Image 1: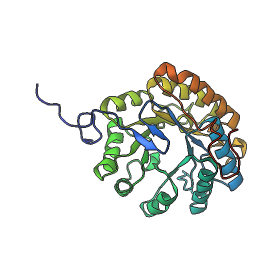
Image 2: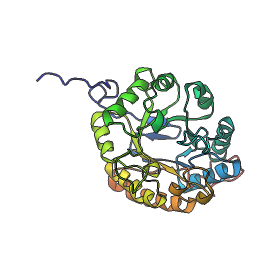
Image 3: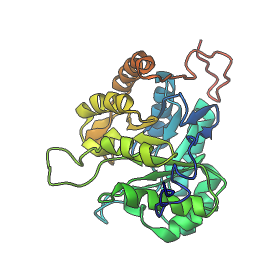
Length: 295
């Protein structure tokens, strides 16, 4: 039998890398048995909002804090983020909670700045085929979280990941966040079958963003459980201390108590799907900048 022909995403393919890639994120790892949850507000708005939400998601069991300092918005009049001031607030949140930070970078010119603050650099859906940005990020020392584009096929998505791998960055995490279809009852259509398709074709870890996919807070918990069941390696969830006051995506953001309940449900379900959810909750040995512990 002749050997299988390599796809255009050679380094991302299972044919060249049969074993799963595991991306280490501090005390956690994406792609192994652990189910990793990244949580926080869509955008960084102010110190009290960011720090309060960061503390809440940390105590609920999140592993990574998310928050946007640079925001790509459809309208030029919408809130665009706080740029470096937002990055500084994220750094404070990391100091407070002990959790790593994931945040988006939109422009090649900002990569050095964002990398100096973030633990994981995110490429948003609108930039998934911004090849000059991907080439620049391929030279970063830190992991990159790559979101699927609004209308990308799985092959196109993996070709975008190939840009990162080909340039030397092996720490790539993929994120399914829904695609644009004819359906209007949700913000996007969450393609959970893509998780299966990607894992069949590629060794890279895959997480799911049910918040951006649905656009509705009430859909986040069921879709999160479905992502766990279908074999995703983790989640990215929007949480805001006061969603009704959020400057960005309040309708899809969970309240802290709702997120806490979801984490408890996921922790109970995870073993049934061969997963585990380990958190910093219950560790009084962890010293926090705010002078508080888990005890």
